[in-house]
Amino acid sequence: MAEKMTDEEWRAFDEEWRAFVSEGTRTGKLSTVRADGSPHVAPIWFLLDGDDLVFNTGADTVKGRNLARDGRASLCVDDDRPPFHFVVLNGRARLSEDLDEVRLWATRIAARYMGEDRAEEYGARNGVPGELVVRVRIGKVVAVKDLAA
Image (spheres, rainbow, N blue to C red):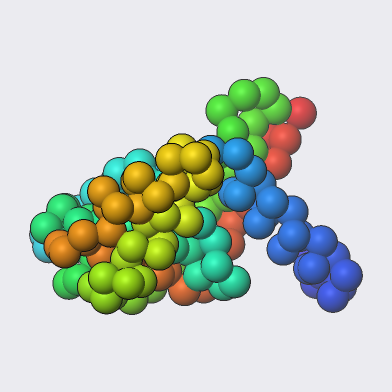
């Protein structure tokens, strides 16, 4: 029978999945909804900012167009080595074209994936007109660890 988590257990769970998705340079697999209702999946670089998942994309990309039309999104982050773990984050996206914000987040995200020494370079490359900052407010989390244990 399922049991309700205590506040302490919930905080530990929250800290654990956040640490997992933020570790190293794990990419996420983002799923959005196409106009015909079919799914679209693309790998992304991302960061967590409080209860938001944050990433950049072009306004004219498939995921950018999908999110502008239908903000529903899911992100899967996994460890493909035994004993296997994954986290799926679901939520609704908000988009911003504000260039200062786009450049700021492009630089922060680049620091995670390319290192601090190349962050400004990638921030300048990706923080340009036509790019978006996407904030997905996390509404649901599914986290599973030790699948093969």
